[in-house]
Length: 360
Ligand code: SF4
Ligand code: SF4
Figure 1: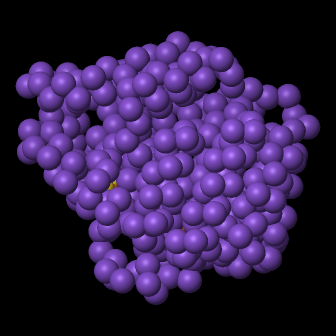
Figure 2 (figure 1 turned 135 degrees about the vertical axis):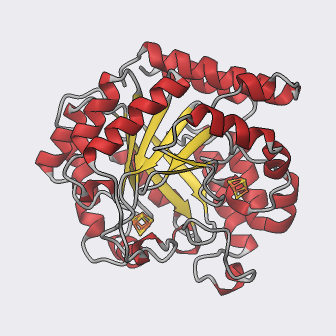
Figure 3 (figure 1 turned 30 degrees about the horizontal axis):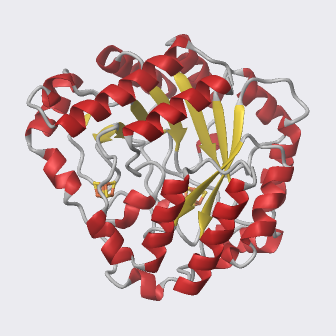
C-alpha cells in the first residue's frame, strides 16, 4: 500500500476525535468531525446472501457518476482529509468504479473497495488496482466452494472471487488485498483450514466479523432472529473457533482484528444481550452515504442530511447537538461487534496507524 500524507492525516484525525470524545468536553461538538466516509454506489447486488437483505431491493435510484464525484468533493470541503470506503450492494455492477476511485485519488483521499469478487476477471482486476485503489476487500465465507456458494446464493461465486484474488498476485500494484469473512455456523467448525487457505492466497490481511441481523437500512428485525437463524452458532462452536483464531493470530496468520476485538466477538456469541449492554459503538466516526445520497451516522439510523444540502457541516453539528452521543452509547444493537462499529481504544488506533505506516 502506498503511504500518503492522507494516511497520517486520517490517523491523527481519528486519535484526536477519540481524545475529544473521551474527554467529553463542550468543545466536542465544535471540533469533532468524522474521519471516514462510506458510500454505497449502488443498492443492487448479483448475489443472494443468506445473511443480507440488500439483494431484495427492487427499486434503485443510484446516483450518477457525476453526482458521486461531486459528493466526494463536497465531503472533502467539509472534512479535509478522510478515508473513503466504496461499497454497495455490489459496487462492481457499475462500470464507473475505476473513474470513482481515480476521482478519490485526485482529491488526495485514501480509498477502499469492498466487493463480493464476482466480477473480478483479469481485466477488471487490473483496472481496479491500476486506478490507485489503496485497499481491496473481497468477501469470502469459506474455503469450501459449496459452502461459500450456498451461503452467497449463487453457484460459481467462490471460483470467481478466488480466481480474482489469485490474478491480483500476478500484477505489480500497491493495493493492500484483504479477505473479509463473517464468522458463522457454516464456517466455524473448519475455521483453521479456512484461515490457512486465505493465508495461502497471499492476502495482506484477513478481516473477521461477527454475524448480525440481516443487513439493510433499518433497525427492524424479528427479536428472535438469532433463534431462527440457520447461521447463528452454538456457544461451544463459537468458543472453540475463537480460541483457534486467537491461537492462529499468535502464530502469525495475518488476522487483522486485534486480540481485544476477537475476545469481544467471543463474548458476543456467548452472550449477545449482555455484550450489547456492555459495549459502546464507534458510530460517529463515519458518515454513511446510501445509494440515493442520504447521509446517516450509521446504516440503522434515520438520515440527518442529503448530499445536496447546502451546508453539510451545519447538519452534522446539528445532529451532534441532539445529544447523539448519549443515544449511540445507550444503543442496544449487536452491530458494535462488527469492524465498522467496533469501539477501538486510542491505544489500538495508534497501533493501527503505526501498522499502516510500517506496511505502506
Ligand atoms: S452481503 Fe454483499 S454480496 Fe451478499 S447480498 Fe449483501 S451486498 Fe450482496
Ligand atoms: S450499535 Fe451503533 S452502529 Fe449499531 S445501530 Fe446502534 S448506533 Fe448504530
